[in-house]
Image (tube, rainbow, N blue to C red; front, side, top):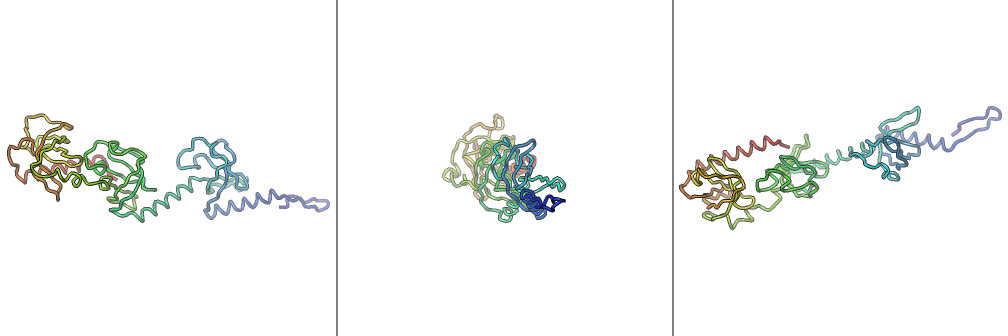
Length: 300
């Protein structure tokens, strides 16, 4: 690059360094116009971020290095970053870059690709990333799905930590999803062995079992007869004057079993047969209670 001409004899003063810097600047401007990714090495930590070598110096703010905050910037010296230009100062030839933008664009592309492959009924592997009172959030590889407490286990649970913890790798079933809202409902229990099959040898009428009370009301008791399988003890099949509480163990006799509806009635004291319509009404009340609990806790 000619940077000076001698007025007396016309000698040309040339600079290879300036020519290289100008070529680099032109490439940076072109990459910005085309929205292209530039690779550069981190050379130095400065206030607020790091400098990278583009053939010229470029600045990457600390907030633009990763999607999450970076702890020790010194650890980045010597590493290669994939960057996009986010600001240019043409007068001073200064450039500000971002790797975070690249990572977020790649993540969004991955989400779109994943959404195109999701189908209801699929079994997918994911990682538990967050727990809430109403369920667990699982990263499917770019998209988070929710496993509601009712879908974490066949047994009734109060908190997802009873079944999973953050960092667990789990196999989940896709229950439903909304591609536009990017919301996915998952089930963990559907990918697990069915307790009705596992404990089939115990599920027959007149069998006597030790059960644990899950819910106690004046009209019925809800008891877990084997892990993951519930039975209802209707009014008339327990002493209304006795005190019952969740967690209490009681001996029951199985009265009726309907595998198609998965409804079981049991008795603590086999005093009288309960009309079928009363059992059906109690079952409907229990289902309504469950739906009310789910709507209170939130949905995907």
